[in-house]
Length: 571
Image (cartoon, rainbow, N blue to C red; front, side, top):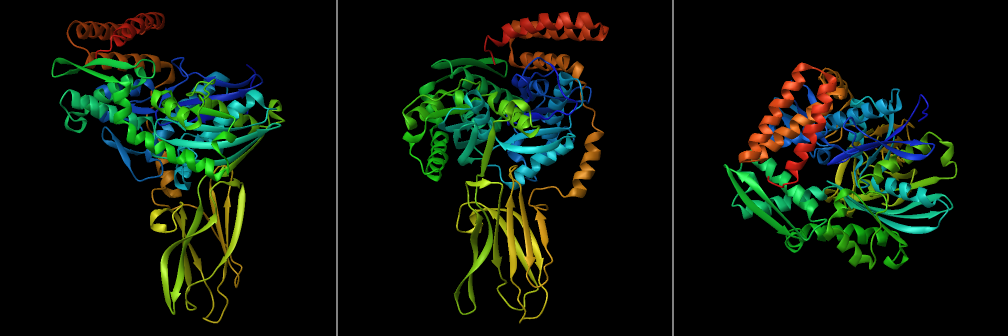
């Protein structure tokens, strides 16, 4: 393919898997990783040689080396939570940066030149702190974020490109590994306009896996939290595989190796629906809220589109079908569609000639405001009230202003606490920042302040406060939030991350196969375990001879053999 020396890539940074794509003259195109796969598991871990592994090799080591491997860290973006790999603790931003760095390397290998700018997708319901954490992760990976795009908006772009001159109103149901989003969009004459978004940043397919792991543990008389980390990781891995099987069959059966004994487990769709019913019920409210905010009825929607691997679950498709009395669409692979849409947005940002007639608008998915007090008597105030500035589902970019005043004439400062949420009380909303506004003059001087909120297309909030008496503006592009990293700390961590040895991309296939073989050894018993052990020894011997052609041939042969073992479902 032909590519300019300056290329924007589109990235779907997912909880379970991540992808990278680029917009070409033929449209958006997914980029395969070093294993020839489009899906790169969002997993990071240390290999036996001390180098950092990313992707499938790390995911397989979750079963054999859980103390040296991490996954599902997207949910901790923008928090102080750290995950320990070996002896070192990492924040979610740092772990995500390793995944981004791997995707960037795949893109550079495909394009034939360096890449330093990207459009990255985020859940529509990510708050300001989580969005800034995503930008920080990209910075750690050496990438400038051109724009953050909401995941359902990206999916709509991918679908809208197929029929850009059509007119329709469609709802996107996006259930990924760790997040759930719903968006309603209108498309007409090449213009795609988001009408409403809603969601839950802590609801996804991983919750269904956790519920199934608990059920399988009950069947064999153990609790996941009471077994070793290795056995717990294997039990969860088995639950994930059986969950996938239920998407294609009414029942899934397997065996779990525990203390040298193969114990049978099984699950039917009916039982799976029963144990996950509380999770399914949580999907309803965001769907209903989005339709209400768009001032529409279910009958007004022309198309229902499902996005995210978790929408393959029979129970989820059944729920959507019941709610809208029609089958949802999934003509584009649910795992691929967000990355393809992010590539379209990258093409728009790069002003690609093939997208001259496409226009995209988006909305603020949640209400942004500040804490205020209401006077309830002479000198008495009710504190902790939420005053909205930008209402949810306002078209962005948007800028709104208001005049605020201190409670008391002798005040020398206003500590403006900035919140995101829908509750009338700030205690039930999310604090995303504090701006200190100095006030000059005595008690008789005007201490009013013009307050301005500006929310951009990447979903990043800027707050400006200008005292009318001094005209000296205080500005906050929110930093110092709970859970966010200050600039000095970002610089320190950048230096530390640059010193970490990353496993070479051209050796990733070998590392991935070794991790896969060891996982199969852990999960097998008897003759199969001995066979896998011989394969490990054989491949280690081939690697030691360092003959590239011999290594490639051995890898292909062993890959086929181990694939047959995995299909036997003995875990």
